[in-house]
Length: 163
Length: 346
Ligand code: SF4
Ligand code: SF4
Image (cartoon, rainbow over all chains, first blue to last red; front, side, top):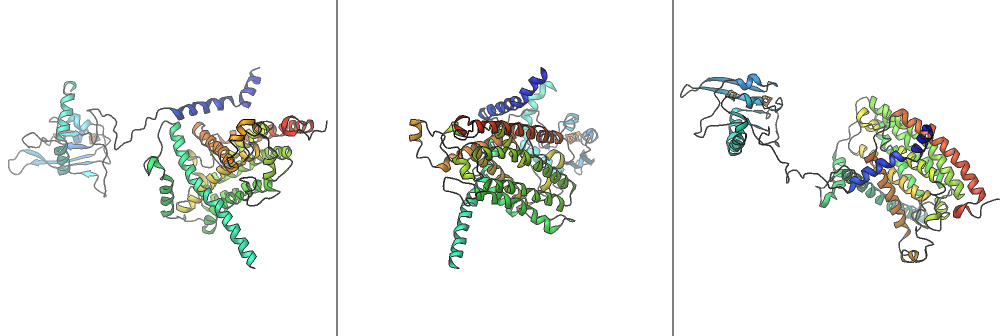
């Protein structure tokens, strides 16, 4: 009996027609595509995108060269050299580089930083044009920080009570 | 002498008149495919180039033409470049016997059906040569798969066409269509329904389309027999595949759905108001439906496993066609229905 049933099932193409009906219905469904550059998906304030180094409101860079971020980075993407700064002798980084090809955007660096210096911004669409551009230098990171400081500060404030 | 030149010129013009729209149709079939599959997956498909993406195929063509043709080292250069031509030539040549309207046919051949069968299976040489000449294991596996698949399904397809042959008593495509004169219920799809289904599925398998796209099998063998091709030589394979799709759709319309005939023939009122529609429009409408069905299939079904394909071809299709041919014999001899009346012997 079940054999007979199977026979009719396969020879009337019932299963195939069921499948076709489903895709046929979807043809008329509302489309969910986001037209990317014009439309954006909503982002969380915790979004982990391009990195930035922040400054205090008085313009002093936050980073104290503690190398915690370098130590915690699971991808070993961060390279830091530290030493006393020439004019006032405070401990600063002389070199701070992130290899964006190694980075996995885990956000550990941001979490480990005692002074909220290294952060990940919401910027997620960026590109590199030359070999070696993927290694962001301290100056570049600081510049990114300056550019997005308002957004960064706003996001930290929103997230403050969970930290 | 002058007559010959003029004849050549006229034939050349006719060929151009068939091929140019065909190539354009291929370009827009790719567009339609991407759009329809996109819609079925709740996306919108290409919509950036030109209004609503209408210029997308043009952009694709330009991109393909500007790319470099790479001949892999160790490949047999002559055969490597010959293969795409061998693949595309038959799929264009087959269009010679397609009647677009009662009088509109390039070669009104009395063996049109055989010619079509021959042309569609010759294309397999292009595939095999492409696979062998590329000197790549994926290409070789793909071409072997394609060859065995085309040969297996050719048989079922041939049997299905024997049914058409028996029903119409002619191998001339024009006469096959004329045998179906008399409106929707007089077309051969009713008495030949199982053969129609088998012909259609075999056609999909012959053109290496999903769910029978094992020769391409992106997830296993990258792109199968054309994995080493780039630029215009790849474009030729692509063009041929889509030209074959359109060909199979048109043939299905001709063999089983009355080709250029008006579906409302014999219905008193509707026949009059649709009388002005040219026959070619009906043919294109029917073929368009089958083309849509082919894309719909691709959006729906996952790829078959290799042994399943072979099982379906040999153990299901061939027996079913043979059984139905016998039933068909009795139907014809008994002069069943509007299709075979007048040919019965009882
Ligand atoms: S996000 Fe993670 S991987 Fe990237 S630099 Fe920070 S710690 Fe390293
Ligand atoms: S960015 Fe933060 S964690 Fe990294 S070295 Fe500077 S202060 Fe330390």
